Length: 251
Length: 260
Image 1 (cartoon, each protein chain N blue to C red):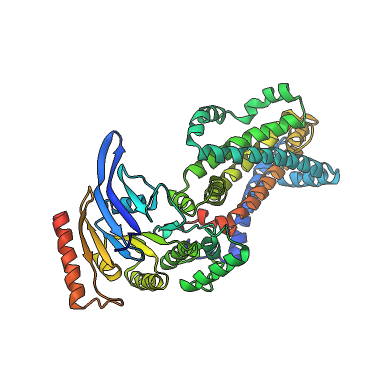
Image 2 (tube, one colour):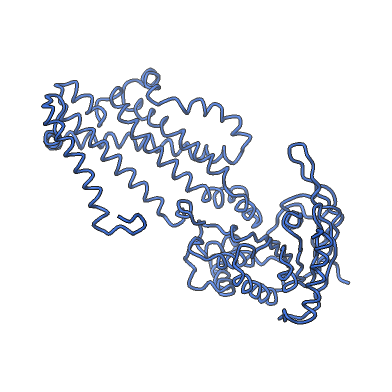
C-alpha cells in the first residue's frame, strides 16, 4: 500500500479552562489515502471539529502528531485549506475578490484566469462583482469552496460546511462537491453529524465516540457514485452506522 | 402612517420640514408673547445671518472653524488609527497602555484649555490640539475594539492562505474592523465639532465659536449669537450627513446592517 497522505498518530488533546482539564481527543490514530474522501461523523460537541482543526494546523495536539506527506503539521498551510461554514467568506470583498484572495503571488493575468475558471466551476457566473451579503447561503458556501480550490491545495478540510443550509440546498451542494471532487481529486476530510450525508459522500466514514473522542469504527462505503440512496446496500451501511452511533452515545 | 410602509418621496421631506416649521413657529410665538427685549425672534436672526454674510465675516469664520477641525481631526485619525490597530493587534501592549488611555479619555477637552494655552499660547495651535485630544480617544478606542472583535474565522482563513503578518493586518484585520472604525471616526468628528466651538471662545479670535462670544461681548448682539448657533448646528448636520455616506460604501456596508 502506498504511503498515506495524512497520518494521525496517537493524537491526544486536553483543553484546560479555569484550571479544569477536559480531555477532548483520546488516542486518535487514522490514515487517509491520497485523493480519498473521508467523513468524520459524530454528534455536536464530540471533538470531531477539534480533530479537524488539529489536522489543519490551527491547534496543536497535547501529545501525538499529525503527519501530512510524512511531515509533521506545525501550522496552517496554503496547500491544505480549511472551509468553514459560509461565515468564512470575507464580506468586504466581492465574489471575485474572495476567490482571488489567496492568489497574491500570481500575476494579474494568471489570477484573472483562475478566478474565471473557479467562478464557472461553482456556478457563480453573473455574480462576479456581488458582495457576499447579496448572496444566498448556498452561494456563499460555493464561494468559499471556490476560494479554497483556487489556490490549488492538495487537501480540503470541511467543517460541517452545509450545516446551516436548508435541506434541499444541502442535497444540491453534496452533488456539487462530489462533482468537484471527481474533477479535481483532492483529498477531502469532511466533518458532519449527519449520517446520510456521510454515507452519501465518503469513501470511508470514521465514526467517533462521545467525548473524549476516540475512533469507534471505520466504515468503508463500497457503493459507486452516483449513489442510489434507496439501494439495499446504502440502507444497510446507514443502519449499521446508526447502530454504531447508538452504541457509542447510548441513545 | 404605517411604520412598515416605505415613506413616499414627498413624505421624506414634508414631515421633517413640518417639524422644523413648528419649532420656528413656537419660537416666534414665544418671543412675541413674552415681548422679550433680549432674545431675538426668528426674523431678527434671519436678518442677522444676512448681515454676517454681507460683511463677509461668516464665510471666514466658517472656513476657520472647518480648517481647525480638519487639522485636529485629521491628525487624530492619522495618529489614532495606527495606534489603535496596533493595540488591538497586540493585547499585551493594550493591557499596558489601556489604564492610561482610560484615565485620559473621560477628561473633557475643555479641561485641557488652560494647559493648552500654557504650552502652546493663545492661538491656532492651542485650538487644534484641543480638537485633536477630543477626537483622538474615541478613534483609538474604536480601533482597538474593532480589531479585537474581528471574528476568529477571518483570521484563521487569512493565516490558512499563508498571509504574512503585515498582509494579514492590512487585508483581513483592517477591512474586518473598518465598519467599527468608521463609527468611531464619526463619533470623533461630532466631538471635534463640539470642541472647536468651545476652543474658539477662549483661544483664538476667529471662527464660529469666537463669533458667538464676540457677538455677545461687543454690544450684546443676541441675534448674531443665535445666528452663529444656527450655523454651528447646520454645519454639524452637514458634516455628519457627509460622513454617513461612507457607511454606504459597498466594502463596509455589511457592517451596518443585520446581514452578514
